[in-house]
Image 1 (tube, rainbow, N blue to C red):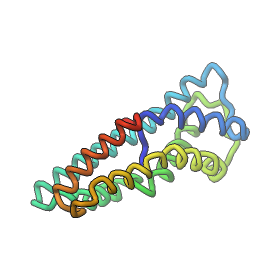
Image 2 (cartoon, helix red, strand yellow; image 1 turned 60 degrees about the horizontal axis):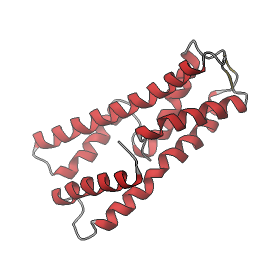
Image 3 (spheres, rainbow, N blue to C red; image 1 turned 30 degrees about the vertical axis):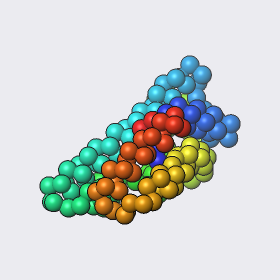
Length: 173
């Protein structure tokens, strides 16, 4: 699962709409734009930290003289130390962050739902929007099947092909 920046508005709109329809939260209509900004800032911060972890992991792999592909394990270790949800843990992590935002923002009138009820509404929405990239990996791997996975050539080609597929599908990030 991967969060794409161009999906943030859709996720926010769908999540807030679903939470209000389920009567789990109450938002004064004039405060809705602020809650939208709160939700979007959580997801933008997630993307910022994810990119920072990627960069830090790549730098660490280079500094240690490890193969280019080793940065994924380093990134996972860094994320674990910082209690940051990556890959399959991203949805749970984002749900927790969004729930915390609902509970602490002054722009939500009332939160009626328990955490597990809020999570039950948020998680499927996040999964739906974040899974649009799952087919990307498969398509990219088909395009570079002639290269040995884990090599520096494979990693470079993977990133190049991923950028091409994202561009063709009009996905950024």
